Length: 420
Image 1 (spheres, one colour):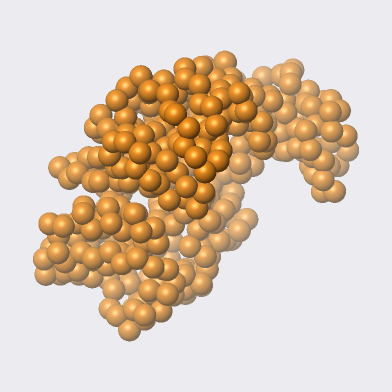
Image 2 (cartoon, one colour):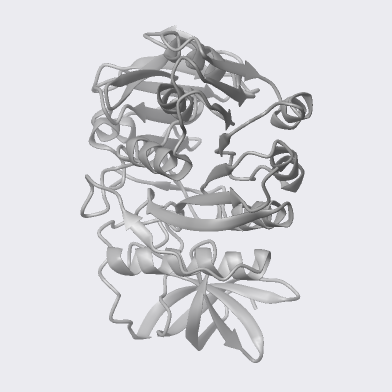
């Protein structure tokens, strides 16, 4: 059926930027539409169980529909944004419904989730501080189309931060380059370009419009300095963080501050307590927890990426009661099984922590856990494990850290119901 056009009514929304309809009792996942719309769709993929399709004509539009601000958004074009055709209020409502549905379906938890707007980007544009541009065989940069290796050439990305846009990546030619990652600090003027060449030899590089560190990424993910600094500076409150250019940091300029405040509010750490920060990256939450528990307490962080561990050591050098160890989170939790822990924050990658790590953390009998997640499905899976281990889910907050896309940042707060 691929290429066939059919007409259907869209019923509801699904995780991943899709809406759901039916055709001849078969589920159809449709992009570029909204719940309640009557649309004509073109089938893009067929499996034994369902179809995937793009809405190519809207016959009865939703009242939430708006004109997409980006000319590269739409069927068969750039796959970076999922909801440019929806009002920002509708986007947040849809994301909340998706989180609630994942909690209900995967974890058996009934909870209404409201997604909160982050400050600084009222139009939902100009927020993304890290953009990875793909480069075609002719050296033109662009963004990948949805579920495809094909590249959509663009002259600019509307959700990119102004400092990323100022680097002028799309105005330059990149011969013998596979991709260019543009990095900008959301709180300083620091910028960097990470270039992945197609071969072992680094080709001559074009000069970006703005001054930027230029780095080379190896195939195994390591980053080597070519010229300029290897890190950017980020500020959260009165504290400055060094973050390796290829390392993890929240891409929305307001997200680091908002999430830090939310985690501290959720855990309410007390002076003298012991706290854990798992998958701690450059030490964002580690530093906040260390300031809260004071010199009479302690904070232990775990991170697998060696560059992030070095960044964390630098960022925590004035907080000697906070320590970050490099290694596997599960292994560290096995070593700490007899340790008394009061509170913990966990911020794993999109794949989640996994039910085993959730159970290992639960064995430490901490009174509260703050789980930060950018994937509702893996969050729901891991929350089910915590609930089985004697925790109550006391709160779930959603944050619109990724406007125009289907992604959403969540904070789940767990409290132990059985005290030692």
